[in-house]
Image (cartoon, rainbow, N blue to C red; front, side, top):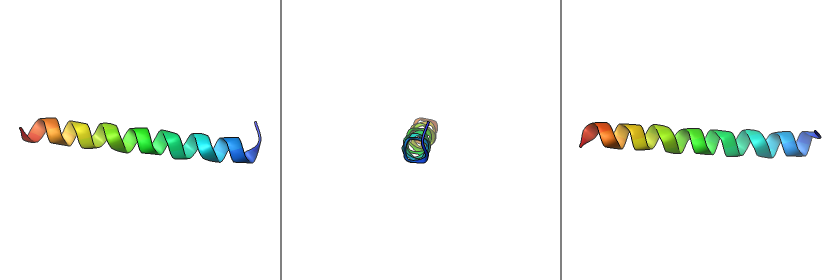
Length: 30
């Protein structure tokens, strides 16, 4: 795996993680 692919993987993982956290917070509020 080259550095570029690793960076993209990290960015995508963080994005998905943030979305899941947002969904959890949102569902807890309602």
